[in-house]
Image (cartoon, rainbow, N blue to C red; front, side, top):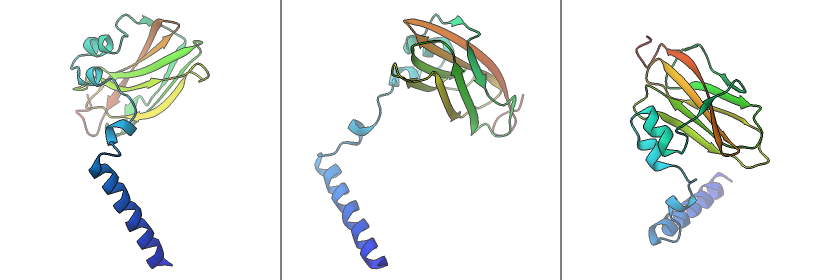
Length: 153
């Protein structure tokens, strides 16, 4: 049985390699769309403008669940929840990262305003969550102190 499984796997990998090599399957076409220009920005204001969230209003309807002190800046768990109706997009920014935009999620009208992910933080900074809903942008922020993988202060 092991030989048969090995041969099936080898054949599948070979077929996939041929499809990519001949141009029948392009890796860029199967990846999710992402705002390349926004991820390339170096400042928080520029990144927010590039993603279309330049003038976000502070809101108490957005909850950021993140550790006060992150033990490892390479893996910081973040959960964003909002009670704002008709959420279209949730974006996460880390103010002092070399590229402030950490994540951006486009949501459909049937989705709940909830996102849970892990982000990378270079050093202690504010994490800013921006929610687009009904053509308006709302924001909330929380300071996360990074100890390992950053300066810790």
